[in-house]
Length: 195
Image (cartoon, rainbow, N blue to C red; front, side, top):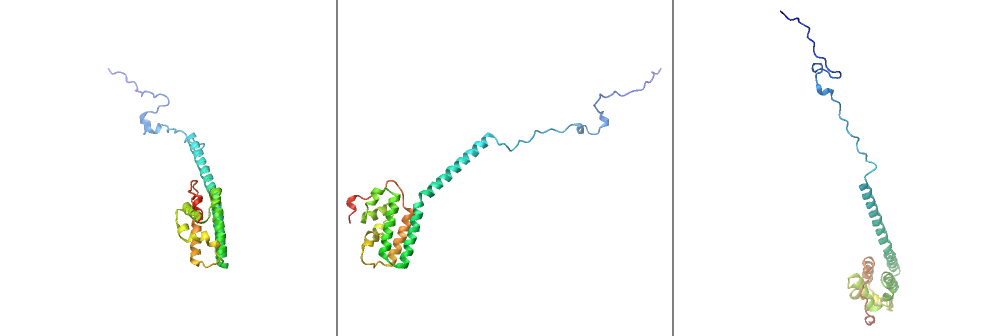
């Protein structure tokens, strides 16, 4: 005998589960990944604040050093303007004695500003030109056109060739730009001051 043929039923799927045959792609049922939020650029981390503070401090220190250097060389810029005026006046008047006297006065003022006033003020003659040589690492004041500073302003005649005065003006301009402000400059002894 035949058993009664009961209708066969497919097992019921649990609620929320779709049978395989019903969906074509099981991966389509997966939910998207939820990524964390992007890290904000502001406010920066503590390390960046420290770095910014350090850079700012360095910048302020550098600007202050530049300003101090600029201020400490103000006398050089002023002296160069005065030297330009002396050269211009000499070009118009051709008075060598007056130009040499003004140049000697300018060089002495600058030296007393940059170095020990008590020691520099007493220097005259060869000792003065030796001092200028020592502070500029040259021998052109003692052995070159700088010799005019020794007795040029005091000579009665003005027979100084134009090229000598031009060389002296150039030498003084170089000294004004590049003289060393070292605290220990060998000042000639008092016995060397008299020619």
